[in-house]
Length: 157
Image 1 (tube, helix red, strand yellow):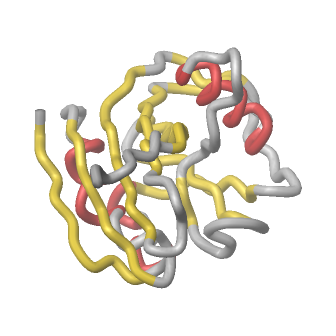
Image 2: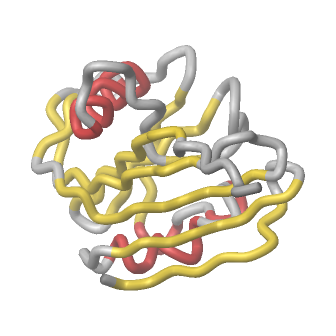
C-alpha cells in the first residue's frame, strides 16, 4: 500500500531588516508563545502567499512592509502535527507606520548582533545568518514534542 502524501500547511514569515536592525515580535499567545519571531501566519483561501505576509504584518504589528522579497522556504515536520509546514520567508527593507503592540505580538527592534536566539525557535540560528546576508535559501527541520529540533538541513540557493 502506498503512503498517503499530505499537502503542507502554507505559512508566511516576514522579517524587517533595516540599517543593521531587525524587527521581531514577542509572541504573546498561541503557538510559539514567549518566543521572538518575525511576523506571519497561515495563508487564507483566496489570497497569495505575499498578500498573506502583508496582512499578517498589519495584524501583528500595525505596519505595512515596504520592498518585499521572498528569500527562503522552510519546511517543518513536527511529530505532533499531522501536516508539514511550508513557511515562505520574506525580507522587508522598510515599513510604513510605527510598530505597535497587538493582542498577539509585541514588536521590538534588535541590533543584528543582539538577536535573541536563546529566546527564539531552535531552527533560527541555522538560517538567519543566510537571510541577513541577503541570500536565498531553503531548509528542512524536524521537531519532536514541538520544541526539540532533532535534525535539520539548510541550503543556500
